[in-house]
Image (cartoon, rainbow, N blue to C red; front, side, top):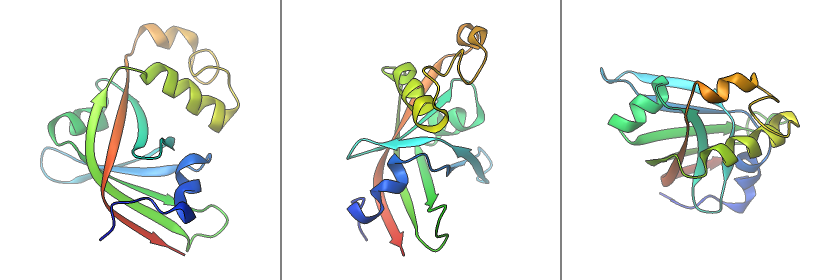
Length: 137
């Protein structure tokens, strides 16, 4: 069992590849969302807003699985399971970086979402520290 992201698959976590993040609901059921992500060389970073279901799940049960599939070869993918740390620090900068990478927008609010949404929600970054990594293809 590896806890390292292999260089051969790190591109799937640093390119504009849509990934699935799976968290655990209070009743034990899995909850999956399609998200943007990035990789800082140690952690897989996902961004959400306080109060959303994945944030609630991660606050109560700080573990998640990421599945990133190569859009050009669906038999090349990486699964990352890990523990999660939530932080507001740097979360707005992170969502702006993701908006640039995924949508070419200079900022998330006003570029992807209406600017007024910035006053209605608080961004939070989810740092997923790998505890188990499976890379295929």
